[in-house]
Image 1 (cartoon, helix red, strand yellow):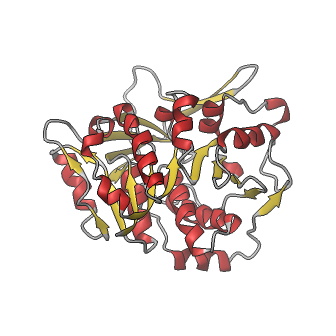
Image 2 (cartoon, one colour):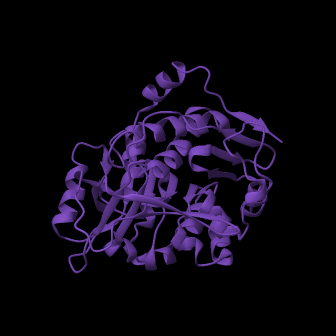
Length: 348
């Protein structure tokens, strides 16, 4: 039996940074969008270049193991140079890979990450094997024998298995954390609701929550910066729509504004944990998986678990690579002890 089994994607990530990248803001009546741009038709110089493994299944499995949980992973790869890189990255990690799926007829996932001078990124993703997980690929006995099933964002035809695995886990008393991704959300709320009904913890960023609920955060009432005194009323409506069961905890992350959680009685607000930002890739995976693990560490203290998640997420964004800056529980607690002013709040 393992503490946690993750299911999600595995990719080889190539990071490309160029000082010639531009950030372009476009405003409409109802929203603001930002784009990374390069001079059209030009040869653009690369400032920095590196390659790392990534993907939600990989990132979260490594994080859970680093936090001391007995961890197994389910992801699908090909049999190529990229799959060799993925498997090699696990050599010094305490993660059980007996449940991964390897198919010689398809390619391993591959991404090119364009990193801006602000530390944010645009991802060019080839899904490959990640989009082709079938129900027959999955070891359901392994899920049955785990304490927690962590579902990372999945894409393509792989989203078709989510309902089955979430239902199976719930029926076998396995705790389920669902980190919804845009591919599953785009299948519609009726589809998503089936998975939500079987999830104990649901994590989305604000944009995903808006897409899932079809609730827009009105710019005329939006906050200029994070406030411990207020959760936007439209975000509260998102929480209420996403919370299907009484026992669920819903978490919505809001980038530089921090993160919020709702347990049906209280709203929790947690600011970001400040630190250097090199690349935001993997921050969401670190946050969501740390939150789940921290609930066990903190005796289900939601606010404190948000703080643990924020600290670990800050560690990840301080370095290139989705798993390079991961902290263990002792390091997280040392960081919190060094910053006693860092607090969460509970609001009505």
